[in-house]
Picture (spheres, rainbow, N blue to C red):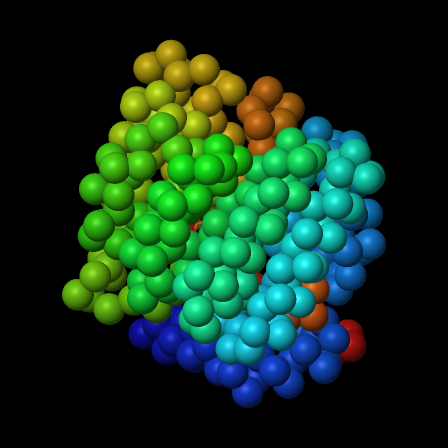
Amino acid sequence: MLAEVSKNVFLFASQSKGLNKAAKKWGLRFGASQVVAGDTIESAVKKVQELNKKGLVCTLDHLGEFVSSREEATEATEYNVKTLEAIAKAGLNSNLSVKMTQLGLDIDRDFCVRNMCRILDTAKKHNNFVRIDMEDHAHCQITLDILSELRQTYDNVGTVIQAYLFRAHQDVKELKGIPLRLVKGAYKESSEVAYQEKEKVDENYIRIIEEHLLSGSYTAIASHDHHIIKKVKEFTQKNNIPRDQFEFQMLYGFRTDIQLSLVQEGYKMRVYIPFGNDWFGYFMRRLAERPQNVAFALKGLFSK
Ligand code: FDA
């Protein structure tokens, strides 16, 4: 009961425009620096270098979402372009993750698509890949529509499917052949569109992972759940799914021990590294997911 209340409080805070705006001025606080790799491209590049040395590959995410002015969206687009250039210049093993609401999706669809094309052209030039993160359910269909439009020109773009949505299995079937990151889902969604019980989400998660793997499509399994990871290992072995057809992904700062042991076992392990000053919404969603994370947030309160 208490866990449910705190989850809702954090999810509510994650969507507060006022708090998100204020937090940009505070700098990384409350222990956020343990899960956000600093607020500049330079700090993120350094982190990727460290992780690459340990055999981990990465994806960089310049934090920001639900942008409401063209200036901000253009600035974010340029920042993403710069990030891809910095990845290429430093010879990093990292791709890029983006959120389309940061690139103007809520302002003007075509403007957002043009911003995506600018990012994808830069990625193409540097032989890199861009993943469109999946945001709340209200943006799901438009994200998939834009993905299919972009895929007509670009083969270096993919997206994310969230297992908590009832529609997930059908979407995965329709996206056969497209590189997908599969996740449980991080937003607060209603019982009209999403499973509310953990068991049902987990069941659907395994179902969509197996569907995408068996269709021969490249699959990223993004979860910190050791039960899921174990099932994926068993399933891929049993079905002779080659290791270069899938990868595991985890967020920066979470379950580092498991990340490293997966690398040692010969699996591809990608770390999602968020950076930038728009850290508040991301950090609140992580607190909502796992009440234990609150402990390090409280520690951070006293250490800053
Ligand atoms: P979950 O939180 O369900 O935990 C299951 C169990 O695993 C726990 O009960 C515990 O036993 C163990 N566990 C989990 N975390 C642990 C920890 N830190 N330490 C110890 N034990 C732990 N969401 C979204 O909506 N859109 C997106 O685009 C993305 N993108 C994305 C990328 C990447 C790389 C990741 C890892 C995740 C996302 N997500 C996401 C978030 C995702 O939807 C989901 O909310 C979180 O990953 C939490 O679910 P998990 O599957 O990790 O385990």
